[in-house]
Image (cartoon, rainbow over all chains, first blue to last red; front, side):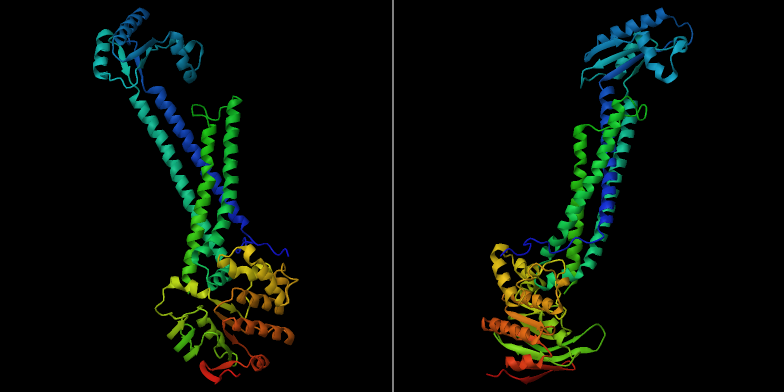
Length: 299
Length: 223
């Protein structure tokens, strides 16, 4: 004879557990935003580092008086000659007047204003990665050949950008930790409330000789599955948000000028999948510990 | 099988509910526990099925001294005891079948191994047509029979029943008594707390009476 459901769950899903699912979904959403922000900051910092490391810039600053194009051209040529003779330098590219003006244009606008400014001549220098160049000696050589030259190895900029990126990344990690703690506390609270509602089931199973681990398993599974589903919804919403930001950027709408793109690459979006897994594990662990503690209090 | 020596019990700072209770239940025995309401019958049963620790005295269960036993040993002791609770304690979200099968699931048995046994047992207690019905839609007597079936399905070494026939008619009561008798013949030690004199008279078993927390042995089993 076909009888009842032979795999019926011993512990029922609590009525009124929906608010907990909503809270977990929101927390997973916030955690995904924080993780996404840290990934964007990390990528931006890496881009800045790659863009500036291995590069030197030599400026020929126009003297306050008596600046002529010929003087600047001569000093630029002299500096280029010095740079080409240095071991480890793979490319020396003096920027044209037009290219220099293009660099300044986003900041002060175009038109005739720029041509009236005493812009320095710029020489972009590419250095072999890992090359040991004595910057002090190089600066001296440049000063001798071109007295108005200034050597810039970007260390100052890279340091400040790295500090900024590190600050964003660590802040995101801090938010992630706070969300993890809040999630654990919420799930623990809800678990205890659930146990109170089902104290009769816990007591009966305990009375019938069920081990604490068995009783814990009947409850922890519910919390694991519901947290996994709720957190997946939250993380998916965050992923959609990042994808929408990517769509806007593709359409040529820049979210914030001068900041890195707010969209995530496909492999970065995959990291967000770790959020539901992490939240589910937190829910599982806190549920298990709460049940074990409750069972231990029974004789 | 069960030995109580000078057992006393009080809840918190209240008066002693049980005083100097001493008795032995031999293996394979059939015993009734009687006494007026509030005499301490349910408390005595609770001590026996390891729901509460005694305030004083010694309890020995299956050769294990509970005062010195490790807590980790209690689950295996509890699994050797079948209990019919006065308030049934059925799980309302499970069907009658799943409630009865619960001890077997706890024992790690596979559904395909116990499905037939549970069907037959529920048929024996007159609930063969209500396997898939959940407790809230069963009558008090039907719930009681599910609780009894759950207590005996694992053929426990010790069966403790608190008023097991309190909600059933005479015919079903008779049938349940035969079930307990059959279980007893298979080796289960049985202790039944009851007010039902007709049940006691029919069973012709040993009777222990509790009065104001003290145990008075009334009569031994008759042939």
